[in-house]
Image 1 (cartoon, rainbow, N blue to C red):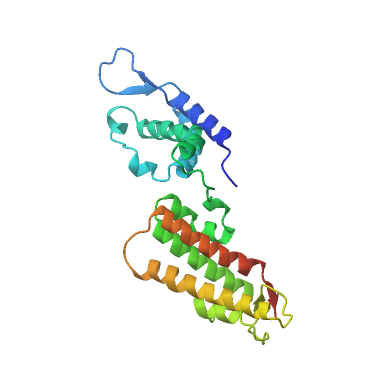
Image 2 (cartoon, helix red, strand yellow; image 1 turned 135 degrees about the vertical axis):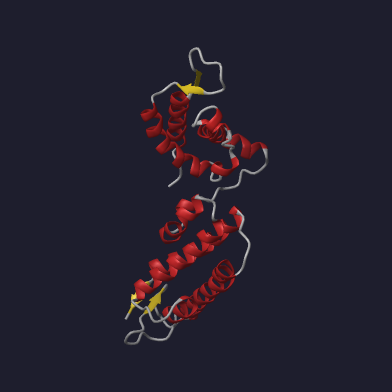
Length: 239
């Protein structure tokens, strides 16, 4: 589901109110205290950090933390929350003014197998590893559905979506009912070719070559894997 922007902004506002910096009475140094009690700020930060991970995925590295020790331990959180609040409040205006009002792809709305596999690594900015984890998750879920551990990846999908009749120990996945038509054959051939492409051109490079992916590149690859995951998940199992 998409983020509840109103709720997120309320949470950010609540945190910023609690974490508001105030000078220590009679103290002339750079250090400052907070308006709220520590336990209140900590509790609020638990939720706010999850909002920041969604709105500003790289906030832990892009927002400086240099003032955390010299001024206040929450300085990085405060600046990140201010940035996130502005991003949420003006997101529609920014897209319109910059000429990019195209539909937005929400990674959390991809097929659950893909996002569940990728989420933790994605939220820490490890996009390449997130894509690889999604490939592993999709392979495992497909093995589970056809109850086979003896084959994997390309061989697994080729056999699972084969148009040949099911055999003992070799069940098939049917995207469409087998009515003997060319459409049935072409669709299942297409799924097999698509799966082979995903594992040859997405899984293999992220597993065996160096270099990171940009966020956009990784999201596109997760979207491709999501298409394949949905075919597997909704296919009828034929034994």
